Image 1 (tube, rainbow, N blue to C red):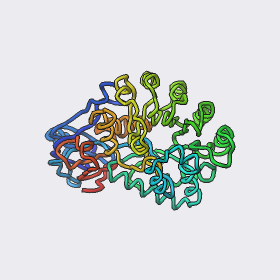
Image 2: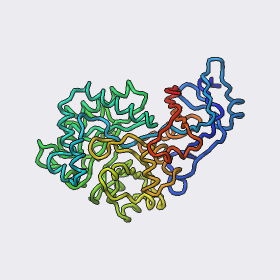
Image 3: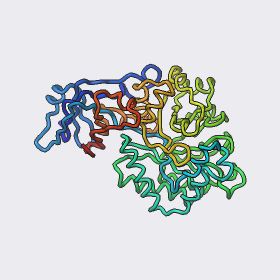
Length: 414
């Protein structure tokens, strides 16, 4: 029998998405709630979650076990942020001021601002500077309950800088408690050195991708007017698949450009954004195994139409939530805030929102069975919410009141 190394006893409740794998349809809102509860952990893994007397009987704490009094607190899975752009230098505060005066995101982009302004700052910085910034951003995320995060490249747009970003993210992850999943977003937008999107995609495939696969587990591309169209996306994604990368896509943020039909055809892991997706696209996505990653903080930041979240859920889509943390269109690292927006603006229930940024987000990152739930055998990533009801996580706007964060069985704060 495994030895109990961390024992959290007499919790008001322990709450987790039910079942295994991604949850969809009515199952999205099904939670397993133990109240009261205790949790036994051995090393980096959860041994048991359940009634205090049962857990104490089956997994009693030994003399060297750390015991935590959970009275008045609620245990939740560590949050999983499956879409972030946390690797960048500089900021876009001046653009934020311009946007507040009426300039649109696309207008700023066309004028050489937007993504390209961050590209310039990121290209000029060193790998050490980037690693320090990523480490700082991961710390912000951890403060808000994120214990696993995706980090994309995409602000380099040339071989040297894209690889620099991926290496910096890896270096930061070695020092941070937050686990990361790296994604290669070489085709984020077309850099000024190239005349056409097609020429740049050829360059990415031939010159950057072969080295990027050493550091990334997934690939992404921005399919949108002014960035990349379906033919370039198909060529890029098929090349990435040949290199063994999981496939993802930014799609339907401002316009429907055929991203969803391509995603369904290729069977990629997710399409993210979907603010412009109509009913037909939402239903097509729901009939597939391609996840819909919704980014309500970005929609709020840019004053975009909201995605058809309720329809996606009702039709049975795999729905996940993420922050889209980035310097230009969603300078937000808080998944609890995203959960609140999902409940107040997208029509999701608190239970659906919790599953969407735990178990379903873990699925998007290929981490099924590892993180995103409080269950035996899962990695011991856990939040102790300093509140009488688990729904405070979304209900308390900007609250994020955690008594403790536990990562891989290690008590980070209490």
